[in-house]
Image (cartoon, rainbow, N blue to C red):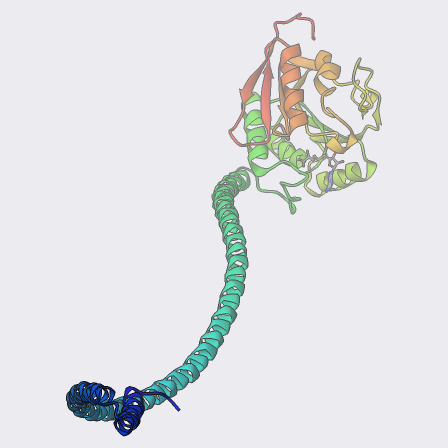
Length: 396
Ligand SMILES: C[S@@+](CC[C@H](N)C(=O)[O-])C[C@H]1O[C@@H](n2cnc3c(N)ncnc32)[C@H](O)[C@@H]1O
């Protein structure tokens, strides 16, 4: 048991009572009185203490009441605060729940969005891959288009060049046709004039082709008409032989000796000569081709023996041998027969537009000072040279 002040005072009072009693009993009054006085003092002290305690107790009660009041207030406040806190907690919990729900929904939405984004990204990747593939394809097409464009440009240039060439060809063709037409006109005009001068007694063999053109025959007949030759030597017999024979017959003077290297053509010409009644002016002879005996000339020529008897030839018509016999086939005519030509003889060369005959013509003129151009009708194949030698001049 705890020894409080009150218990100690009561114990002390008890002891004092006992002492007072004992002292009084013993007659020790002084002690008893002292003890009574001490007990009184102690009682006073105790009363004072009790009063103090009571005051303090009252104060304590007041404080306690105040504390209780305060406590109640605090309880109220606490209750209200708890209620408010609970309300807040509930609201907060609700809010948190709704935030959580919202967060969940948002997470779901985000997950869905994420998935959509990833789908979109995958789709974008796929599209990008396709676009890249298209880009590559477009690049290829571009390259191909470029190649096609280049090819088209080249084709265009080729077509343009071909068109230019075709246009040039057309112009050349036009020119050729115009020239051919002009040639036909000339030949027709010449034929009309020929048949105006000569009325054949039989059908005339064709002119042109292997034979002299009508223009050549007309030129030849003009030479005969002007020169009135006594002796015409024609190398290469055929249609022209007949025309010359007709004109000589008309003129009443002169004869033709026609040489052919082929028996069958000589025979054909003879038959025509007979059919046209020209035997008295035309003598057809055969001369085989042989070495003409000229230095640096190898192509065979007519055997000179077939014409060795001829003197003072007025007109030498060189229309053979054919070019197929060899190069410069007709060249020997002038050098071989120069000594048998009259000083003012005329030499007519057919096919003079061919390269070989052009060279023959130029060589004759180079090698014979007195041989000049007499008639060169433009465009005609027959060219005519006239010899202009003084009597006694040595033939080349
Ligand atoms: C260019 S031709 C000369 C023909 C003749 N000077 C004339 O203009 O009628 C030369 C050679 O052709 C040959 N020939 C002659 N008559 C022929 C004919 N009807 N067809 C093919 N060739 C012929 C002969 O060998 C003659 O020597």
